[in-house]
Amino acid sequence: MNVDEVLEADWGGVGNLRDPVLVIALRGLFDTSGAATGALEWCLADRAVTVAASIDPDPFFDFTQDRPEVYLDEDDQRRIRWPENDIVIARFPDGARDLVVLSGVEPHINWNIFAECILQSAKSLKCSVVVTVGAYAEAVPHTRTPIVFGSTANSALAHRLKLDRPKYEGVTGLVGVLHERFEREQLASVSLRVGVPHYLTNAQHPKSSAALLRHLEHVLGVPTRHAELYEEIQRWAELHDAAVEGDAQVSNHLKILESDYDRRTKVEIPTAEDLGEQFEQFLREQLHDDPEK
Image (tube, rainbow, N blue to C red; front, top):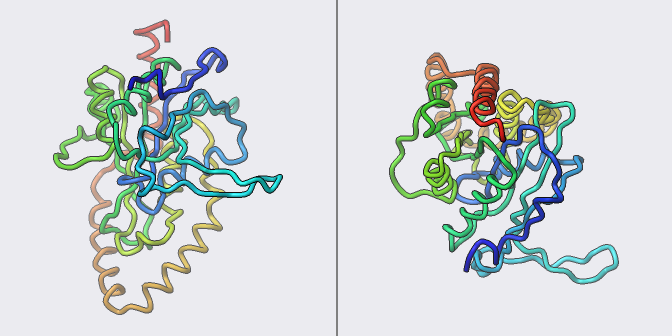
């Protein structure tokens, strides 16, 4: 099996893109409560997008683990909904650039070929940078604004954006494989991750999605509509508060988490605004060094 057998693409039909950046979120290990994929889907909701490429699900999924769904279409015909990994183009005339977006599902097998599909897509669409967004369970309180952490293996980006270089060792998901592949191919990439309260991982947490979107808006210079999540955030906050108030042990634990959070946030962390300004400068330098992009 090779990429040409599983990646259906129409690069020529995309047209010209303005300084495109590839943004990736995958449902799976690094998408606690669906906060990352939910963020990208919210950003693209009601926006016209063009499907540039699709990855055939058949060679990558164990359908006893991630089962397809039966549904009735508008004509009451039975259809099957398979796990989708479409690479779409979202144009932002009122933003700084266009985005290439993959909001999909982490595959079960054949990760190397899947990663190669994404890498080829990034190269074919001339994306100068890749940004992955993820969410993970963390000991953080739901009563505070989630902190978004970033890292990059690219030394120039790490220095300019004041981001950590990844130091994690251990089991990983496809996102970890992708970043290793991007680094090997000298394609700059950034990982943005938000924490989701570990005691609420069975519930939705739109506050974490909004935090990711706020960073993406500042860093990439595109409107993400994160402010429009306010009502959803308030609704879920009330549900979260009610769940905690009914459990004395969790309530006491929450007070400890709040104290720890307040202490940690005194440490200087790059703001979304700072990241955005420095990211733009990095992209300008990239274009200057490679005028064909």
